[in-house]
Amino acid sequence: MYEPFRSNYVWNLAVNLALGSGGVIGEVDEVCRSLTEAAARNDDPAQEEFLQGWLKMAGRVHALAQADEKAGHLYSAARKLLRASMYYMTAERQAHPKDPRKPMLYRQMLDCFRAGIRYRKDDVEWVEVPYGGTMMPALFVPAEGKGRAPCMIHFDGLDVMKEWIYLAGIAQELRRRGVATLIVDHPGVGEALRLRNLPSIPEMEKPAGAALDYLATRADVDAARVGIIALSLGGYYAPRAAAFEPRLKCCVAWGAQWDWHERVVARLSPHATTQRSVSHFADHLNWVFGKASIEESMKVISQFKLDGAAQRIACPLLIVHGENDRQIPLSHAEALLDAASASPRRELKVFTLAEGGAEHCQADNGSLAVDYMSDWIAEVLGGRAQ
Image (cartoon, rainbow, N blue to C red; front, side, top):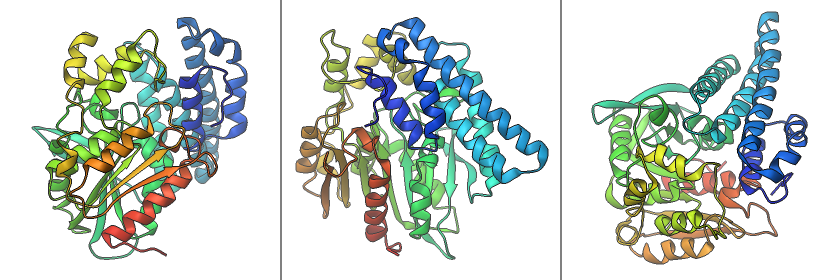
């Protein structure tokens, strides 16, 4: 993994996520060079410097895009708008949940992303998925070709959102292989959390079922060939949904989970040896779960275990994990594989240090995972291999 900051995994992870979703190395390096001293301190003032560094770069790239717009160069504006959206996202992701600037940063990210997609003329549809009396915002990316196509429901993790998923490129690769994608901001993430006040829940089969119901209404989707994929904490979300929603025809855990409660306890320990994914970790958990204290959040998190659920998975299962994952040990992926004995086709793909993609959710080289998962999905759901 590219590690510009010594002993600051959270910031290094954020940098790699930005690079893997459209960030330009020169711009990213400029931000990182300005933060070297702050990264070593890693205190509250340092977190402010991190936010300001990324916000400054986002604003600069955004201004360049606006100049392109004014000149009528919309394809050029699109490239810059999508980069700006990623930089706003990087700043927003690390901001404290109660930071009054967080909604503004999120809105700027949304605006840049939507304009960039429109100017680039990507085949993306903004949709609303009915869910429990409200709606879950989502992006629908159709498969290439005509007729009803298989589709993957793509859920998020603890701290990413549908726009990051799209910029990571998997929906575009599935599209080429004849598979559509519905990228959903489900309870606990993205727009569902920030603008709809929907906290995360253990029973992820409920929003998955709502997504399946929505896809059944589309003339361009074969409702009999729908699977689910999710990353990071989604390594719990997707298998949990597949265990209790029999309509799902395959499941991909992009970064395994087995007992997330145990991992959170370890991360909150004053002597933690496992890495966190975001700054202000305990406060982030309270925000995601809609609780006032970490004790209340932990009562919900105690249910985030796959033992007893994994044994119910009856569809093909792919688990993708990194040999050097510093957040979730490989043993959790192996436990999930062993427990999913009812799956007719189960596979654990471990990306090694020798080949790359060895970090958490292949943050060091996401393209390797995207290619592997896309090929597997196309094969299982009946898409195109070439």
